[in-house]
Image (tube, rainbow, N blue to C red; front, side, top):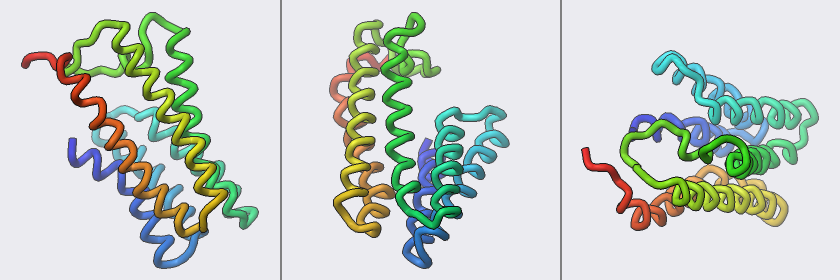
Length: 178
């Protein structure tokens, strides 16, 4: 689990490090390669493709590619908003499509929650990802490129961990006995 967290964070850290050493364009190229490498590593280790990793890699390829081709950083700055927006939309759509919300469909063995609770948790993530999408736009528009890079690398990671920890007291009563 900790190894997966570090592995998942590696593309962002490589992006940040390359930005600090070189510039946004080099960092964007490194990010694209690192995200596709992440997809490949999970494929080699688990023989399956994580949809979220693939969506993120494809978004980076499109928006990062536009940034590199047009030499315009606005496109790479838009990528997190698109990814968070897609996540929010997919989670919201799952309230209307299928029998169970998207989070309840993820294979897991520790949480046993009734459908109404899954729906509330799923909707909380809808709101969280929508807020992250809006926050990315705000930071990209109102702060320097350097601040945006740092916030995207560390700020969203911290916000996500805090959001997860805020769920812990509520979700603890639904942890299944081993």
